[in-house]
Every structure is written in structure tokens, then in C-alpha cells.
Length: 396
Image (tube, rainbow, N blue to C red; front, side):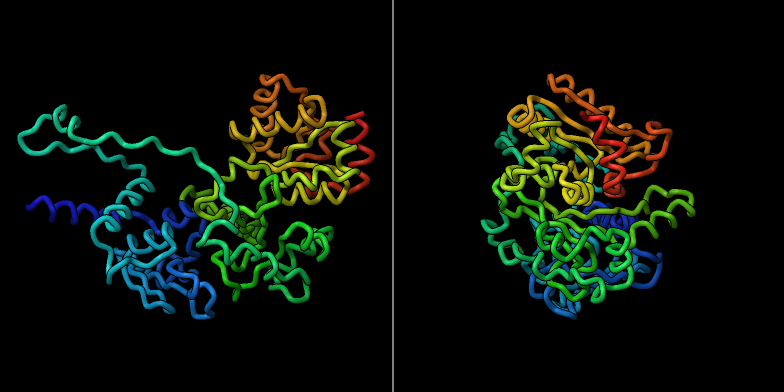
């Protein structure tokens, strides 16, 4: 069999063996709710589709090639075409993937499946001599987040938060339930934090989720994330189904290319310079939590918190926490993790890492503290009375 034919056959086999949900989860997208028929999702190929009510993409779940069809822009293809669109936000440059575009999509498919290519020497040439002919790759630049207003492709969406619905009467039932369970997410608070429910006819792949604007310390919007309003329902179903790893639901979805590990949610300087928050930081320390709504809830209690957007901190986040803590509060840090096993494990690692940097770390609650009354709770669940009566006194 010619080498080219064998290569194509191998690619076809890899496409057939790759579950669609594995690819979607790689990009932070929800998995299909069924295993046959069609799966619909927003078209990833161009902005016009995302703004159109017809901008859906259909994936044939019964096809081994995962054939796709974009109803608005008429793009057709298979799983590789979908990967190309999710990576680039553009359709193939010709009627189908060819050349470098095809190779790039194949390499990403291999990465998704945990496969690594080995260099293949030319016929009659040793591995050593072949390696000498390969030019040295330039150093990979460190990751950085560029403000959306400076990104030509993203600039049109920098004010996406203004498209949000903040009145529960105008939301879908699952979204309305999400906000009613969090009455402190008032319309005024949503506008202040540039977040809210993005309706399904909106101009973004995050449509149908609760979106959050992520800002840098200067206040520029870097990206958006989306929170699945049906996550709790999907999580319970996942548990009832025996916790299958391949279909584990995602609570948050982050835009491809945004490096959340470089930032802290709520880090904008004008917020931390607020007189009331500044006094708290100076007296007690900087508070570190996991999620976006944890930050917003504590802010409504006049507690200045910064969010990791995870239960673990990156080296860049540790450095940023250290800088803020040393500048504003003599190196004092307060950890308020989610009171579940994952949050507890992350808090232990974070306490060790911050202590190694010479910071003073305090933990006002845990799963077992206060006679276990806070077991299973998150900072967003706190009432004003619980904060004032149970937690704040331990920081005095």
C-alpha cells in the first residue's frame, strides 16, 4: 500500500475511533446529549453565522466520519473540518481541508487523543542525519492575554456583556432558576461585573450560558467565560450513570486561546482601590476563592476576594497573589475554598505554596470546622450573618 494511502487510512481510522464528546470537551463545549441522530451546536466558522438565527452546525452522530454541515455558511466536511473551525474560527481556504490545514487538524486530533508523532527519517538516511537536516524551531513565546479591543478578530465582541439579559422574567427557565437561587445577582450587580445570561439568539458561541467578563488589572476585557445553567442537573445525571469519565459535564467554558492561569478574577485595580475593600485588605488580608460567583458574592458582603477560576493555582497566579499581598497587606492571605474534597485538596496545596513564599495564610473555614456546618458549601452560599458571626471574628 502506498505511504500516502496508508496515512489517509490511519487518519480515517483515528477519526472513526475518536468520540465526538472528546473533541468537544477539549474545547470546553458540552457533550452531545444523545449517541445517535444529529447534534446541533453554534457554527464556529465565521462571525456572521454566530450572529444569525440560522447559524447552527449539524453533526451526524451515525456517521463514522462525524460528517458536519453548517446551515448558514454551507460549510461541509468531517471531524477534521470541525476541529479546523474550532481552532481558527474560519472555514477551510478551499472546498475542503488540504495541505497544511489538513496536517494541522490531524496533529490536533492526535493531541486530543494523547498521541505523539515520532520523526520518520527519509529512506536510506539514518535517524541522526535526518535530525541534522531539521531546522531548529524558534523558541515558543510565553503565553499572554491580549485585550479584546486590540484583537482584530475579537474586538467586535468586547462589549458582549451588554447583550446579556439581567431580568429573570426575560430569561429561559433554567437561567431564571440559576439567578433566583442567587438573589444577590441583581441587575445592578450584573452590570457592574459585566455578566449575565446570554440568550440563545446572541452573537457568540457562549449563547445560552451565564457569561462573565474577565478583565486585566487595568480593567481591559481579555475574554469571556460561560457557565452552564443546567450544570447541576447534568452533574446529578452523570453521578447516577456511574460517573463515566468521557461524559463528565463541564461547569464553565472558556474561550480557546484565553490563558486563565495568568489572571485572577476580580483583579482590576480600580476595584481593589475602593476605600471599603482597601480597608478590609489592609486590616485582614487578601481573600482567595475558586469561582467567579464566589468573588461577586463576597464583594456584595464588602469582602475583597480574587478568584483562581479553578481549585488549583498556577505559578503565575501565585506570583500575582504574592505581589498583591505584600503591597497591600504585609503578606497576609485568607483562603476560602469550596468545602468539598477537591476544594480541600487544592487548599492544602495552595497553603503550602504560599507559605513557601513567606506569606501568612489563614483558613477561616473547612469541611470539619464549626461543627461541620459549612461542609459542602461554597463562598457564594454565605449569608451576611454567617460571615459576620462565624467567619469574620476568626480573622481579628
